Image 1 (tube, rainbow, N blue to C red):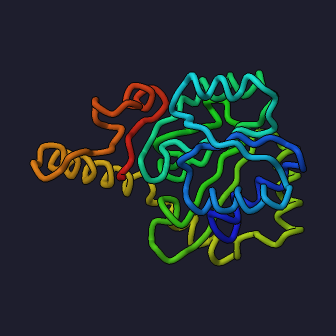
Image 2: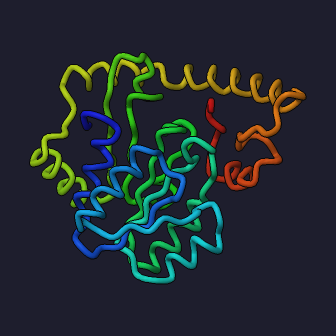
Image 3: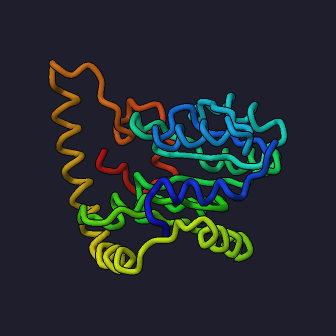
Length: 227
């Protein structure tokens, strides 16, 4: 548990060294992009931004060695979808760890670890807590050794979450499934209205068959989220 969603991102970035190559989505969350740019400018690592929803661009970027692939699917805010199976297989060839920001779907609607990811990041401020009274983050690692390294760095740089905030987040997780069911129902109704409204030019929602990432989303998600 970390103190914020961005501190969860910062924690994972401690695994990188100068000259390590990080491949990140060109449309990632603004706070993540600001952090990546700032640390790269200080020489902490090298970052390369690409359109990860484009399979050709993704595989080409990972045809060269990389240390880490940062994935955000659906992306914030345009809900672009990255094919996690393709991302993982391409990252393995490049020697890269796969980190997935799963904030927008939560473990209820998408489980990146079962799809081959190495690390999953959440802003618990959003779905997991769900009561708008906690700011926090979470990092989950597949490899126990990586988890130990992350725990060590969390202690060193002081980004661990407060005990009471952790308690409140556990309280929120108890209602995660019913909350998300209602979110999905409400989102479907809103999308249906907007998609047929003459004043709306475009609706960005992976649940629509017209969305370019719809088929991939159907394959790797169990719902399309509320956004």
